[in-house]
Image 1 (cartoon, rainbow, N blue to C red):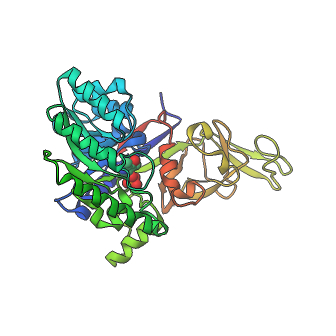
Image 2 (cartoon, rainbow, N blue to C red):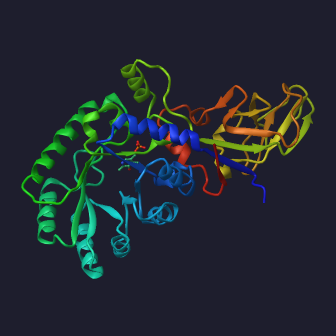
Image 3 (spheres, protein in one colour):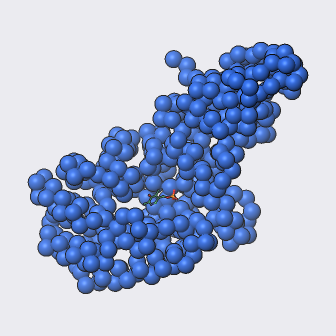
Amino acid sequence: MTPTSYIEISESAIETNIDFIHRLIGDQVQYSAVVKGNAYGHGTEIYCPVAYKHGVRHFSVANAEEAVVLKKAVPQQDVTILIMGFIHDSDLEWAIENEIEFYVFEPSRLEAALAAARKVSKPARIHLEVETGMNRTGLERKAFKKALELVEKNKGLLLVKGVCTHLAGAESITNYKRIRDQQKKFKRSLEVLKNHDLDEYHVHMASSAATIRYPKTRFDLVRVGILQYGFFPTEETLVHYLNKEKNFDNPLKRVVSWKTQVMEIKTVKPGEFVGYGTSYFANKATRIAIIPVGYSSGFNRSLSNAGKVLIRGSRLDVIGTVNMNMMAVDITSCPEVEKGDEVVLIGCQGDLEISVSSFGDFSQTINYELLTRLPQSIPRITTK
Ligand SMILES: *Cc1c(COP(=O)(O)O)cnc(C)c1O
């Protein structure tokens, strides 16, 4: 069946972004590709094999379900999969058996991991997450010390593959003090490790923002999400990077485009309303194109009478309310538009572009939310 709309994933853009990340961190630091939230809406099955092809061997996801999808998408033998968030205790055996690494952020998770490891006679590959001030997940100092003792007593069953923490907002200078405090606290936790004899493990703290802004937080592994998809975490992070480089070209490329086609065209007489209710009044003869995408496919209803789309190289207005599966666009200024014409919802057409952020409410961190909300049901295809 021909899809109503489709999402294009640009392989060359992925390559550009991955090369940028590798150049930025150098070859002493490993890069874990954060692919939670269906690879930030890009599609795990599409994004991850391309990332693999361009040298990525470490992937991080939020939970066990995401790990299952990821595992099928990339070659098994030389890839590390890390679960940073939730796994039910009953899935720990599965994770251990499949050599999937996971965060341990509270004592009972460690006990459960030990029990599961014993059961399957294989070591649990754990990352001890320490609480440094985000106050979300993480072992408090005392629990961290206890965890290390338990690890030492059960060396064959608990394998520490990482010691880590998460920063509470490195993308904004407002949080500067908090980030510096977290760095200090993390350093104190790392000192505790000196008293313990562990095998080789990674130390990691930085996501995209800290990787750019606080190079010292890179240690030997960074967990990079949003940069891979062509976005700086905030405008502020981008400006910081450009000023430092003295090069004012954005080094990243948007990976995603979203396209559909014109479904119907009609002319509305002056004095009529368009769509449900009275939200759009045609005060002159108005030609409209009906587009087969609505809020059920992720085109937010708040874009009623506000959104823009590209058709035949023109930027055109969404008029009336965005319906569940349809919306109307004013094409009066563009008489050559025909049924079947390509409609760009996100991406480029001719010289014009609809960016992901313009698609939202212009607020800075919205890219994350907009991307992950692109419904899984829209087909993704790769392009060069
Ligand atoms: C999402 C996430 C990241 C990646 O964040 P970006 O800002 O997209 O780079 C890193 N670490 C953890 C724990 C995360 O949840």
